[in-house]
Image 1 (cartoon, one colour):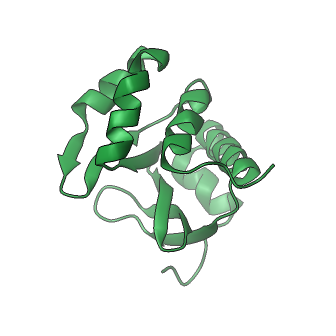
Image 2 (image 1 turned 135 degrees about the horizontal axis):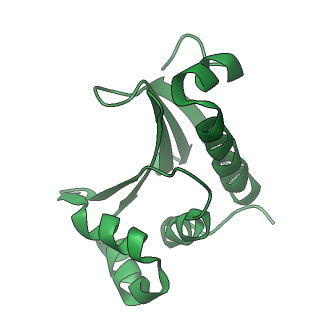
Length: 137
């Protein structure tokens, strides 16, 4: 857990103005569809911050902020991977490539995207739907 949550100024300085806009739009999109706990943490070695969406002890996804970059991670378990595979042709080429290259661990396939704009957001929401149905109307 973080002692202080980074504000707009700090985030803009860290990831840059255009990515801060992408970050905010992605958060707004997730918030619009999901009522979740939101937790700020240290981002580990590769990132400065982690911003995780959780509910009932289960993580939906996490956003990461680093020097001039933003990350969006979804972890798909075995059953979720089967659902993705069944529908993979309906995802963009970029999503499929990142999925194929993602590392699979004992708890699932860790898929990290680094969006530079909002073009993949439709696919991101479809990936989240595999994990959990939206709980906001």
